[in-house]
Image (cartoon, rainbow, N blue to C red):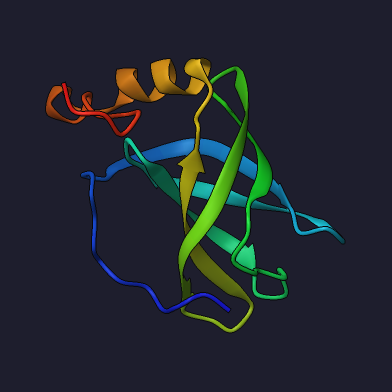
Length: 121
């Protein structure tokens, strides 16, 4: 299991509602609600606690705002929800596709729109 939630952020998080993510664990597909995004990843909530989370790359499909994005993600942290049936997970996006980069650039404050690819201008 991943380490507990910590607040070591590289990028400011922006609250964003209306995106659903489907993630496969090799046995089942689970969905969760994206609660916030940053230039480097996102936080999902309402993930069933039976999701078999191990530290590896996952393929995810993010849907919402009349768009779909296929991304490779890696878990960074987990936090149990207020009840035992759900958890929250923070993911980083590995090599985000250009369509995703454009999408989050429109959602993030201007000062967060740099360094999406991990390079400093």
